[in-house]
Length: 451
Image (cartoon, rainbow, N blue to C red; front, side, top):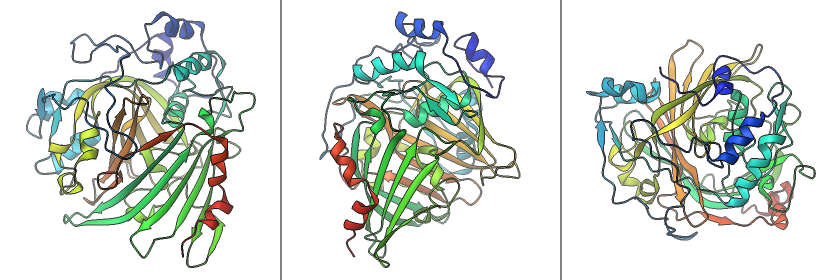
């Protein structure tokens, strides 16, 4: 397995498990200012082979809106190669364990690899905060708490795995985001079941442009999910609050159950609690490939690799779901894959902690800091699940962010496709408004009950 080193600090981090607070290095800030790194901390230059281009900072053309699908800005591209089970060995260095397993297990599965498009561009205000964070952000409590950070990824040049995962968690996904999405479960026999249609609203106090680190409350995100289908579950609602202090306050959650007509505090919407609407194929901490507290894992930064990952998948999200969902995997003709540099983080259980995934490996896109692939191993050391997250490009914002994602159970053959907006419309991005926080409270959850 070949890893690329950015600098001396990253090379050292590849061999170490984080044990204490990190201190920003002056050369990190200098690299951001000089232009050798992008304003988001990625390598600006392309790779030696020319298969990964330099980042030019130009947002793709804007198309679509909150009520329409955002068109594929790269629709004219053609695959430059196709990887199948027959030729996977030739490309093994650029494939994850999970991708190799799907190629070997699922008949007809393939990767259509397109030219790499570094489409991740963000507002200048975000870049300004990232530069400030490079010298003010630090970790405490063995990596579980972020201090001094605000309005952008906290660690543009990560020194350890916890910093990299905090970048993933706190990566920019808009200020207020709304969409309706479906969740489908596919059995090993090929049956397809719509288990949930959810109206999702997300608000990110961490990205309030009027805020600052000194006044930041510690709540980085609030989420509200209202279930509208199937009829048996319609009216259920869920609200969560995530914090930058996983040591003192990992996560809060509330549920509204229409049969009981009341809201109750929910202690079971985090970690490896199974997501009932995913039929046991994904847990609550599998959202976006990983979400929630890091207190059960030590995160080790393995370095950087060039990996073939799903990317720039506006077209996937615009297709009818019948053209997307296949037996054993997503329809390979619907998914765009590209070669990108990714940070690799390996999670192993802390002493005395438990999770159904005894080991996890995350592949974080250097341009967005978001996990685009993930693998999980069970307690017996068997490769158990592999996850894929699909990037939506919104040139009108601008931003690039994962939205839909899938988890494949390599042992049972079942899989789940979540965050699917194929049949439900577009994604709305709105400016932060503190008044909107009133919609993300337990009392608002109760008043929104429909049954």
